[in-house]
Image (cartoon, rainbow, N blue to C red):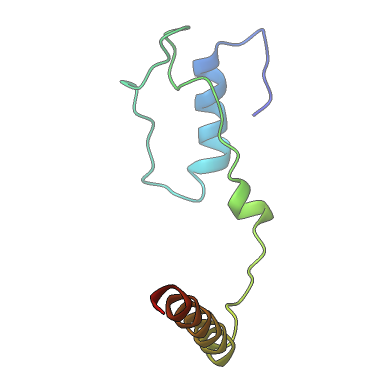
Length: 87
């Protein structure tokens, strides 16, 4: 939303809402009770960057057989170490 120092934040928000939101979601509304503590206008100053949505790359899990082989190897190593300690 471009900022315009000649307009109030409330007017900018309402204009953006009318142009960009209501055509797609006609029953959407702005909660006027949600005001910023600093400027006391509608909306809270700040933003959120959803990094996971934009930068996440899915990596499928390893095959089950590979995981089982790793678990068997670790279990064997643990049993060997326990055998050394016990004897």
